[in-house]
Length: 37
Image (cartoon, rainbow, N blue to C red):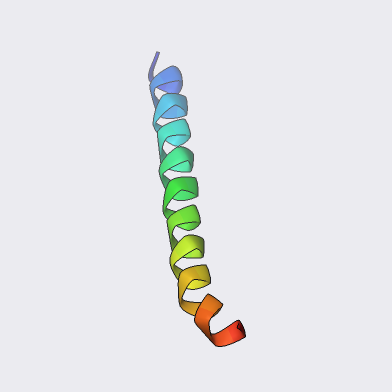
């Protein structure tokens, strides 16, 4: 039971990590677009 709980927590952590990473990528891209053009 505890193993299932940790697996669910890990999935949430990975989703959170991916969401934060995509947000960072979007911010970095937004900052770099004016420099590239």
